[in-house]
Image (cartoon, rainbow, N blue to C red; front, side):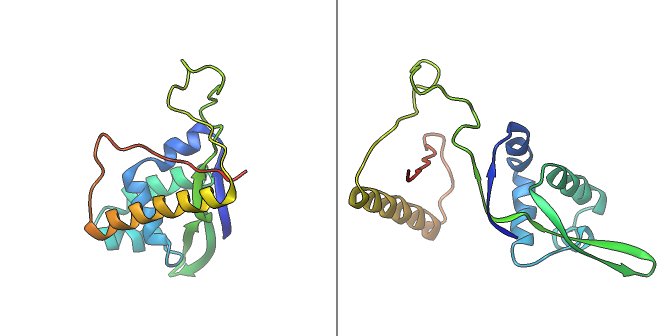
Amino acid sequence: MKPLLVITELEQLKSISDPFRIQLLSLMADGPKTGQMLADTLALPRAKVHYHLNQLLSHNIITIHHTEEKNSIIQKFYQPAARKIIPSANIFNFNHTDQQAAPAVYNIKMNNVDYENFSKLLSDKEQRKISKKETATADEYAVYVLNI
C-alpha cells in the first residue's frame, strides 16, 4: 500500500465521492477484505458491494491485495491503494489569474512559523468537531494547504 494517492482525474474523484464507497474504504482500512466480508458487515447484497468495489478498482482507488481459493471459488481480498487519498490541486483546472473562474481560490504566502500555526489551528478545529460528533453544515468550506 502506498502512503499517498493523489487523485488527478475527475473520474477518480467522482468514483470516490460516493458516501457508500467511502464507507467501504474505511472498512478496508484495518485490513484487506473480500466483497462477501464487506457485504456481511453491512448486511447488504453481495452484488451491490461488488459493483462499488469494481468502480473503485477500475479507478485505481483500491487494489487486490491477494487471492485465495475456497471451495473452488477464488476470493479476492481488496485494500485501499494508499493510506491517504487526496485530490490534486489542479484537478479542476482553476486559472488563478482569472478571478471570475475561481473566486474562492487564494494563494497565500507565509513563513514556516505561520504555516505551522495555521496547520495547528485547522487540526484543532477538526479535532474539536470530531470530539463533538458534529455533522457538516452547508456554510462550511474545504481548505487545502500545500506547503511549497
